[in-house]
Amino acid sequence: MKHDPATPVPVQARALAGSHDVLFITLDTLRFDAAQWCFEEGRLPVLSRYLPAAGWQRRHTPASFTFAAHQAFFAGFLPTPAYPGPHPRLFALAFAGSESIDENTWVFEDAAHLPEGFAKAGYRTLCIGGVGFFNPATALGRVLPGMFEQAFWQPEFGVTAQDSAEQQVALACRLMRDEDKRKLFLFINISALHQPNCHYLPGAVQDSFESHCAALCQVDAALAPLFAAQAERGPALVILCSDHGTCYGEDGWHGHRHPHPTVMTVPYSHFLLP
Image 1: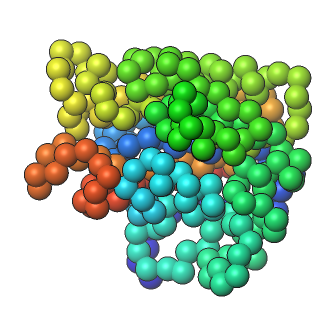
Image 2: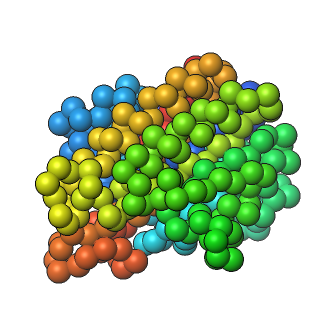
């Protein structure tokens, strides 16, 4: 098996049940190469406190666009390490024939998706949406948020808002500090990396690898209050990953919803907050 120096510390997810919050953050559309370049250049001072010394782990996403990827995530299929397995999962829904469950996997025996499983385990399940698939204005936009006890979306969280990450984190912090003291399964879909992102790079008029990186740097700073609020609450498992990447002309490809390696290769990490 190939050694990956960015492999996160193994987590016994089953042993954390009821004692740890779970923060699941998807950095929508974040490319692996952009995430790792920003890390190696020292442009992620907040996330670098928590990532392994080698940075992000390279993983393969189960789908090339947001809706399909998140359907897989909420079924327990997070991005898979980009080398031969087996790769046991952190969380799983019980089904016959599963081959990626081990003694450390937290298995939800009677749930159709992870938010339902956490709710049945006594957790408060919260969704703070970002991109259009979390906008409840349409029936399709209500599918993913509908899995949660409470779901939030507003235009200020969307792809055109330059301070979307700050707005999303501010709401998360308020929810984390309210009177409901149940353990949390908090999901945030960060929209800032998704096109358009040229507004994060002064003078840019079109999206590029450089504006993509600029967006990530702003997100990095925006996440600091979230981790501070979690420290007030107590221990947590934090999962950070992208749902898919995007192309800026590589091999003639643009955007995503296609199988170019830049789309299907994503950054991933998880860590425990004490």
